[in-house]
Image 1 (cartoon, rainbow, N blue to C red):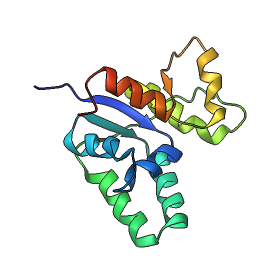
Image 2 (image 1 turned 30 degrees about the vertical axis):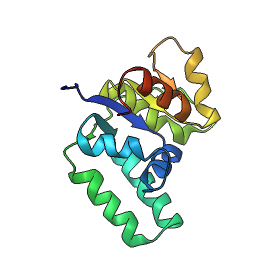
Image 3 (image 1 turned 180 degrees about the horizontal axis):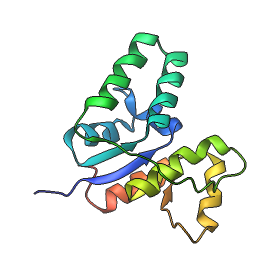
Image 4 (image 1 turned 180 degrees about the vertical axis):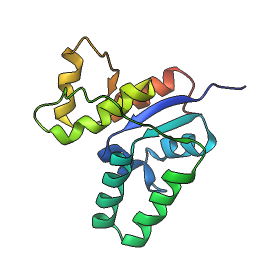
Length: 145
């Protein structure tokens, strides 16, 4: 069965938990590798992923992941031309929102409470899902396996 790849944006807290080979959420990373999901990133997102990974692991691992994000065919680099500034509590989180809008992603996945404001905003309308909600959605839509 052929499935159309779906564009997603992952907050850093989600990206970190999908990388581990023993993570119960590794299936998301595996679906990116297989092309079922297209991970949409901006330069600012790649820089944040790399910075956080370097702090939590090693610089070498962080640089390897950065190389993956820059070169993998199922990772889409997205130019953000407009900043909506929708999250006021932690303005740094807006890079994920703007990338999701610019890339026309089906959803933004985050467990960060600052993103909850997006559920009240009518424009631009974003589909915000927690990691568990995304897992449930994927299960209902035949994306889990």
